[in-house]
Amino acid sequence: DAGVIQSPRHEVTEMGQEVTLRCKLISGHNSLFWYRQTMMRGLELLIYFNNNVPIDDSGMPEDRFSAKMPNASFSTLKIQPSEPRDSAVYFCASKGQGATNEKLFFGSGTQLSVL
Amino acid sequence: DQQVKQNSPSLSVQEGRISILNCDYTNSMFDYFLWYKKYPAEGPTFLISISSIKDKNEDGRFTVFLNKSAKHLSLHIVPSQPGDSAVYFCAASARSNYQLIWGAGTKLIIKP
Image: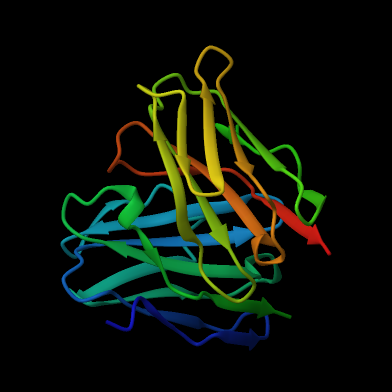
């Protein structure tokens, strides 16, 4: 298995533009997590899906952020409009049904820079 | 308010010596703790974990110690090797499969 796959690896955009980050889960996994990493705050959970359903979105910063799981293996995180303070590394991670956190696997991340 | 704190943003250790990374938590409901390791341009990967029923867990060169009364855990790496240079995240959860709360990470640099 190729692991969790994120795209793009790097994204540079201008303030006000829409940004879409993509994530492909490991086959058979049904829990999906979007995280944001910054120097100041470390890893912050943005949203958690289980079986395609958003379970906890309390970490989504504001209405400019939205996330979807159109099918069991794929998710998108959209920022519209983007702002410079959104610059960070965004990770998605997945694990199987009832799996312990030792089995949480991360993608390589998307480095987002908003100018 | 950060529930999991890693107060040292970075740590530099001589190759062959012991590396000690520290982590404090505030929520007494946490009973499962993990360390993840992250190399540049990669996602975090699981390193070692400990349940609150134990005070020590060892895996090769890596040992995690848990002091529940002090709400403190530490990761010991002995001996430290150049490949250990990475960012180390401490994370905690209320159960082994519940959502993780993460620390900000400590960047470990192993000097040759």
